[in-house]
Amino acid sequence: MRRICIGVMGGATASPETAAGARELGRLIAENGWVLVSGGRQTGVMQASITGAHEAGGLTVGVLYDEDRAQAAEGLDIVIPTGMGAGRNIINVLSSDVVVACRGTGGTLSEIALALRFGRPVVLLDFDPGEAFLQAGAADARWALAVTPAEAIDRVREFLGADGSSNDV
Image (cartoon, rainbow, N blue to C red):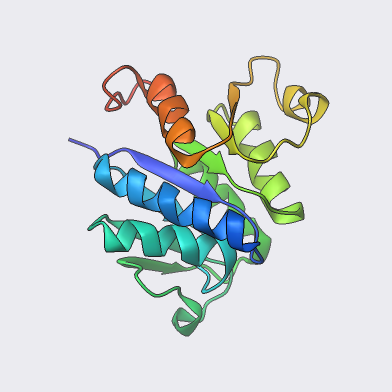
């Protein structure tokens, strides 16, 4: 059976609060048996979420911005160097059943827009780019706001189905 992949997107630079939330989110993703997919860098939300998932025994995948495996975050199980720059954002999004976006800037906003455009549900963890932006992605866009990592996981479960294992997202 195919495993559920949860994309965690967010800034390469993160405040201590955002990093702590991303780490907790990674832990919770792993505890649910889901695969964590991220940009795989050694910084910010990416490293924090990977660390949390890795510490909890989860499977982690990093889709890298460049072609240098040495740039991969510690704790990654699968490293995918792309050499595509920001073009790798589409791989992150399309590989994810649900995207969770933590605080970030332009790259994170592009991933949110791509997710909405391609029908992936988006959970925004302590990050609200505004309803106009979110609705512009697609007429049938599915998104939810969450304040805490636990609440974000609840929203992910709702998108996946009651047991959190549906491939019908």
